[in-house]
Length: 112
Image (cartoon, rainbow, N blue to C red; front, side, top):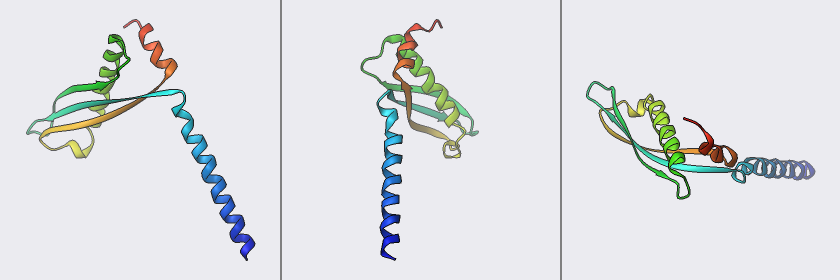
């Protein structure tokens, strides 16, 4: 009976360590950006406006910042469908975007 407990314990520890190793792999080759936006909902429970307040990126070019701001705006519009934001007034959002380093470098090469 004790052998089964030992085997189950070892199996659980092994699966946990494998899951941790697989999930931490994205950190090595990607960048995460935090952005603050505000949603304004009018009295008719309609989205009135979206304002991107801040994009946290110390090493971004102006073009990269502009693309990240557009992404924050797009995500805020999608987030406005959440029932939590169906109340009149101002709602503050903190959004996170994760990009691979290659995709982030390619933002400067886009012709938009």
